[in-house]
Image 1 (cartoon, helix red, strand yellow):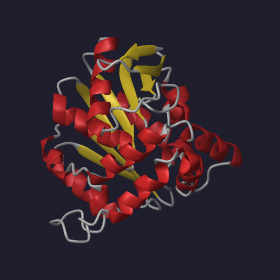
Image 2: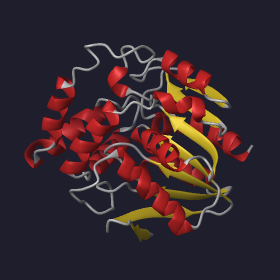
Image 3: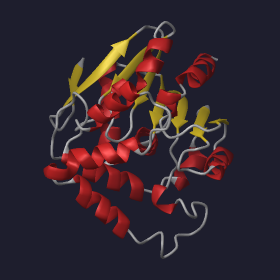
Image 4: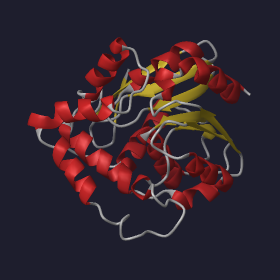
Length: 269
């Protein structure tokens, strides 16, 4: 299915099942297909909607809107297009940041429940997320180098494949190839601009205002330390934290048998 944003960008999305609506928001250099194991497991119980972000997957490749706030607006317009008054939102990686931006801009009036999978609110500050910014945290030179790696078409596919491959832990060879193939579909503009915008944005002040029932999901072998999730959980009014021992960043793909029943119980409870 498709809809058009207010700045003229065509967004593709999957829509299946029926029942209480749940909308999935994928991460950087990914697509709705990253949630295939969740969509097939949950489709008998919920109406499931999963868009490809602008510049990703089947959606239009455009050189505009490479910001989390624009992606949040795209999400808002999808809810409007579908006429959804109440919806649960599930984000993975950068998809969590998009949901945080949506809440920041539009509030929680339409939100039923929230699921955040393996993302923290200030990626640039991972060394000291709960303190004031240090000089080291303000040094964005590594991010500048990252931007330079993704922007040239001549190096984008190889750099994206290498970057994504390093996050996978136990994916099968076929799954690994599929993830990398999808990652290569992201436009150079989207790959470069969105990863920078996501990593430098600080969402910490938002969490004490989140009132919706929330599930935080993390992998102990991901690159984000467990104390970050403990801090996030302490800020929110109604939050449950689950951690999969030994799991990495792609735990919705690599640990679906563990995660899917947890999602069903939380979203349906």
